[in-house]
Length: 565
Image 1: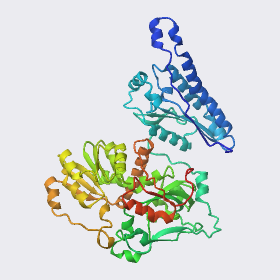
Image 2 (image 1 turned 30 degrees about the vertical axis):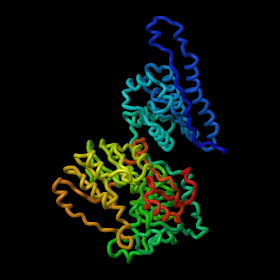
Image 3 (image 1 turned 180 degrees about the vertical axis):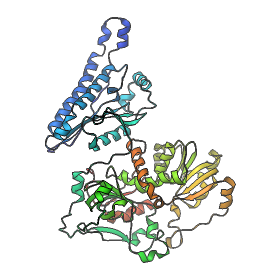
Image 4 (image 1 turned 90 degrees about the horizontal axis):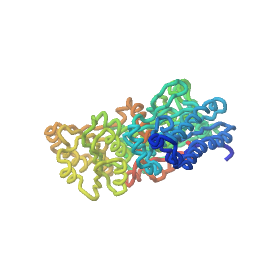
């Protein structure tokens, strides 16, 4: 490969230490002091020796352009571990080894750091038996860590150059991520919202590819040329912004990498978001969200936004189905990474987070019903409701989706193709449902409405079943006889939620969602079906509307390899 950019040293084993309690009880040295000697000496050779050797090999291959060496150590290296004294000594040695190499960051741009997680749910830890139970009790751990939590901490350290060399990131079930004895300030600091990564040379090269203008700077975008719920018939690919166009002060040129597909894309092409004068506004730029990379920055935008060429950013303005875009800095949100998961957190994640808080007034200890729960936004509503301490009922239409919802933590999953939601609610939830996150409409809305508890809240974030079921494929408008009486009888409420009305909350909620994802508390499910290029957007919309999607549907707008982004 010619060079090495990142080395992650995971080598580690756990063997029994000499039994010092037994030695103390015997009052003198005995054969028991040598029990397992070969094991703990081998453990020392691996846990410490392999770290030193691995780091030396890495550094020798990073001399040309720098890199990151990350050691996966253990909380036993920074916290007392009675009963595991020899193991703790090896991990403490690894930690001090890392801290002693802090100078290398400034001298050679090689950053050596380590992560120190508490016990994680791995086969090694599961095999510890009584020693595991003793340490959990000693450290007052409420649970073992999930593998995803440790991986998230590793990714944070890899991306966060601002921590400098010798950084030690502890990961505990009680406090999450905490920088241990931070060398820059000499104090601990908890890690909360995701840190903004510095501009990446690789991302900058990708974003500015073709900026020389040899092809005239031509880009493409998807627009609605007529009003119709038939997305494919309503849209066409046309010429977009020029890559070589000059930027006004405060503007940013972004190369789109990924964009999300939403159920409301067909509402947009129908003109439902533009009122009776929609026909006069054609053509309309389509697409609600995207993640990309800054390709050029106008005057003052860099200072106001805090980004530069090569910075990953997200947008939530109309026109997401385009290869490039010129955006005002106020519409651009810096994000930790260019990823499909980041796209999912935008319209879908923000809708769930803000709607449950603002419209649903969600609190703990309630019963929450989420319809279309395995979709792009439903998956987040399920997890956020559970994280808030609620009992979650989730509906879906296939066994595969039901399996996913159980994995996401839903307490009761209802596959409406196999059992009646109405009967389940009537027989199992006689006291009613306190909060409903509803996106289906039609009969599903009526069922949820009738199941509301006293002072229950039903939040309408969509009505997908009605989007194409009306006259000429248009929006079916339904009447709900007796609605006022039902609400009055239970002091219940039905409220609508439209995400653009809450733009002021985007950044704070997105930061919160990223923090939950990076700490392993929020899982992001992305539909596995691949869609590449503007030509595939209509196929992606059809896939979502078919009801066969699982999680967030994402399109790769620019057909390039994204693995290094």
